[in-house]
Image (cartoon, rainbow, N blue to C red; front, side):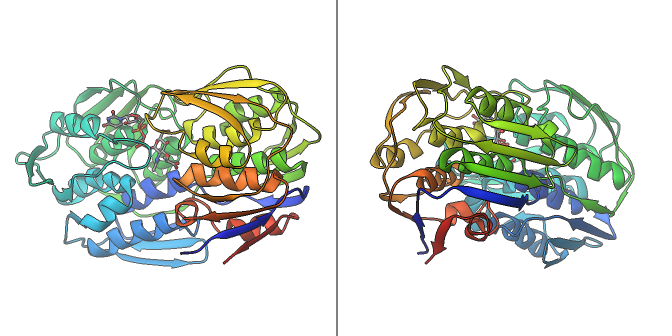
Length: 417
Ligand code: EPZ
């Protein structure tokens, strides 16, 4: 098993070009299954989750080729509407292929996605919505057999919770369905708008992306196009958190500051300096930062749950006491144990975490528990005194493209062993 060995306490200085967004690349790869001809996706990050999505496309009968940051997908004649069991378990977001396979092949067989480190990950909102669009779903020994006896048709769907994945799955099923689909209380995350912009470029008729009401009018067919994936706002936030924890000044390029306002605002509350341009952010942090009295994760445009762990890592050495409320996932404080091993003073109860700032953290042997929890331990290790050995880093490789190279280039002492 690979691990990172980090010597903390070194300032970070320099430029970082931010990678493409994982949570945009994955639904767009699923969407490419809906298109005739070739889709060329640029700025696609080199991540294990992206490779897994390419394997699902290949097993469905598509041609998928990734060179550097460009993925070319040809989906002229997909023939197998099955999401392979190991991929379903390995990557929860494989559920996105359900809507795309139904849209293109009118059938899909998939394993019931297991829970994950963040808690049970139900898909009731996905399945209820698809049933309203004419999908019949039979469950046999943990496998879902989905068919559309009378074809997919538009529907009016109200989401009880603005689920990102459910919003995306409905859009993927609706673009080739008969008639109009209206989603109310839709999720508003920027990655959903990126998916919609890709689909519009392929000929889909969609309005209202980024708002709570999205309208999709079904069309006969879609043709692949060339599309550049948006920057990853959570990876951007992670590099900012690293500079905040270790001290330093970074210039991030290829960013979309507008999609980060909920996060930049918190860094500024803590005393960091952020200046935003069209596609770059200049960020600096010097000396101890201020605690944040109350931080609550919310659906976009609120503070994103995916940035909660990395902000907690920075708050460990802020002046004062911070309180974080995690309202999206049940079990998203698992990184607190590792931070405490590094000397942090954190108490969690249910969805509340109380972080009392300490003077500094010290290096320790810690394990990544999940993708963003692993990023949080990496962030903390960069600011800690001494050496940290971080294991189970496969979690981190799911969402970060060569993080040790990115961080070494701006002064961190980190190596992958
Ligand atoms: C997406 O997951 C992201 N993943 C997650 O990022 C992110 O944390 C999450 O949205 C929230 O922003 C991808 O885009 C691939 P949800 P998703 O459906 O779609 C409940 C990362 O770190 N829910 O908005 O699964 C669910 O249990 C990952 O990059 C239902 O109850 O998130 C959760 O509590 C982690 N029933 C809440 O909604 C459903 O049918 C949010 O889930 C679906 C969801």
